[in-house]
Structure formats: structure tokens, C-alpha cells
Amino acid sequence: MTAEIERWNHNIHYHPMILRAVPDGCRRALDVGCGEGILARELRRTVRHVSAIDLDEPSIELARRHDAASDIEYLLGDFLTHPFEPASFDVITSVATLHHMDAAVALDRMRRLLRPGGTLVVVGVARSRLPADLPYEAAAVFGNLLYKTTKTYWEHSAPKVWSPPETYAGMRHIAEGVLPGVRYRRHLLWRYSLMWTKPA
Image 1 (spheres, one colour):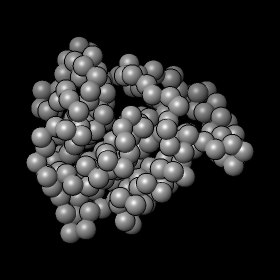
Image 2: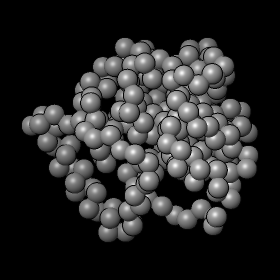
Image 3: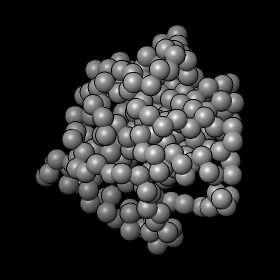
Image 4: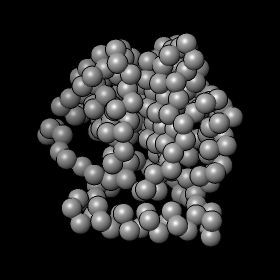
């Protein structure tokens, strides 16, 4: 398969933010809902051991066939039930995946898999409440149009779930209940982020 080509969409747009949050000295990373493995390959540039898991077999097969796949552990399976060792990862990432699962259960599982001092970074999709969220929607439409004047949108092959079951406010409430002290932020392109460091 050919080497990585430049791709852009609303999920990939936030990869640099995720990569900046990876703690120094990170040795083990887990990417949940890895799709075709773009973020996993980016993580591998600075993290010694990267595991990446997804339920979608065609996506995992595409990831495994990539030129840079040889030293990444791609797993076909359910993140919620796969026998990972507790407290075994320094960083856990997840992009546009939580809305495919029970968010509270998934966040609790991520919390338990992190080592003390480890970092969790989630970029998620949620549902707007109108008219309360109308200003966010308007800004997202405008921002999206601006980005598309300079970038070509890439459509991923992974299955989609729409519409998301939780609102942005609902996701913030869930995250704060499971991850005390979590940093929640709403972003321009129909995304939110969660950043949390597990107490040492």
C-alpha cells in the first residue's frame, strides 16, 4: 500500500491537539476506535508501543496493510470487553467513538486502563440542542466553509452512528461524573474534547 497521503476531515483536524497532550516519556498508548489507523500511526512517531482497537474489520484490515503498520498492534474487537491489563497505558485516545457506546461505561473503562498519572484525550461528537446551540451551529457552518476552501474533505470508511444519543451538555455532565476534574471544551467543527489526567 502507498505511504500516508495528506487527509483532512473534522476528526483529523483535531489530531494535532491530541498529539500535543501526549505526556513526555509516554511508553504505551491505546487508540480506541482507531478506524484506518491514522491517529495510531501519528502516535507511534513518539510513543514506543501503540495498541489500536476497532470493531470494524474492513477498517482494521486497511490499517494493517499500511506501510507503517508493522510496529503497531492493531486489534479487531470490542474495547469494552477486550482483556487489556488494568492501569497499563500512559495515554488513551479516542476520536468520534464514544457515541457508538454507552459513554459513561466507556469512560470508566478508559479510566481503569490508565496508569496513575496517565492522560486521557477524547474528541467526540454530540447532538446540538436548538435553539440554545444555534450560535455554535452557525459558527461551525461558517468555519467548515472556510476550511473547505483550502482543504479537500476525506470521507472515512468506518460505520457511522447518527444522530448522537447525547447532547453536548449531556456529555459534559457524564464526563464530569466519571472523571472528576476533567477539562471539557467545545470546538468549532461539531466536536468537543475531554482531557483528564489520572491522579497519581
